[in-house]
Length: 356
Image: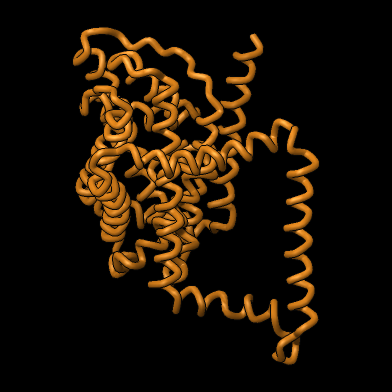
């Protein structure tokens, strides 16, 4: 009974969180903005969703190949098709609750007889590399979009270090350094004083799992191919974002370099909101505003259109995978719980197309 109530609370909480971000993304829109948004979506070229879906499907296939590499490196055999179907079912399951990683591990454990706890380790490894890739996308955005970002943030940054007369304020600099030092010392003290508590142990465990995940690739036989898969996954994410720009005339002039920043911020939206609902469109709209695109309605239209493309891929390919999996393996899927703190890594880093 307690577990059922916990699951119910989880669904209610994430539904409320999604609703909050939807409200946040549209709260400042006027009636005229709504009319323009409806018109923009009506005029959008939805045929461009076809290549977007193709690119997303290709990225999911590469993800399945990369995951299989990690499984094979542990000495177990698994079907490429089973890995792919498990990945797609995992995405589908993450739309409503954070069960995708557990479910895809259950599928491979059930059909290919790979120990579930070993599979959890491969998930940690994947997520660790996805975290590095996401940070790399942010770094590339800062490098290639420095002029745009600097022009928009220069005033705010300068105000931190200059006084009202425009001169460098050593007092402000000293205060900022003092605050940074206090935060670091307080964090160190908290880790030492409360290291025995559950929450601190879980935080430490997350970082330990990230390190273990990054170093686990040493067991992969074809390491260059592993990195090719990783770059390919994120490259396809970038291309799918860029292709989406052409669906709306107001954003069709944006370049693939501009898509870097949209991918970076859209990824954050996918992480903080279940399914990316609301948060993804909000952050995409705010990001393209850097390039002179009005947040309402054109930024909103782009954000919701890109989100819909990903959502559609999860529903379409996930449903097909649910149908094919038992038919290919000639036996029904039985879901059994997998208990491991390693799955906690999923809570802090996901690939941008993961709707958890």
